[in-house]
Length: 80
Image (cartoon, rainbow, N blue to C red; front, side):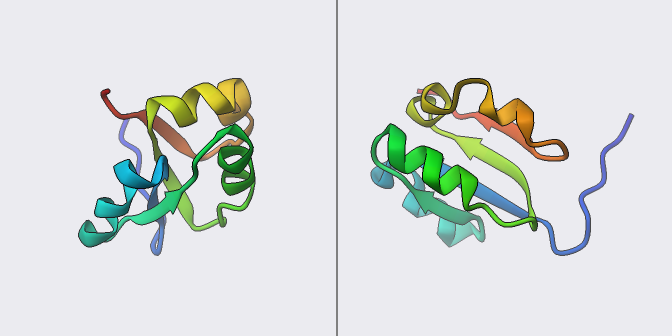
């Protein structure tokens, strides 16, 4: 099975500022969030154009299973 991203779909990288800001240079939407509350707020604020979210380990832990409640969005956790 092959997934095809919709035209205009974006990749977002969410997590600690020091770990995500560089991804903007490659065209990703960098979403810095330091601390669990900020991670949750940024997750909730992601636009409908975001199809893939790369999470730092800390961001993934802060979100827990909330990522499953966003159908159509693929999430991955970056290595430590």
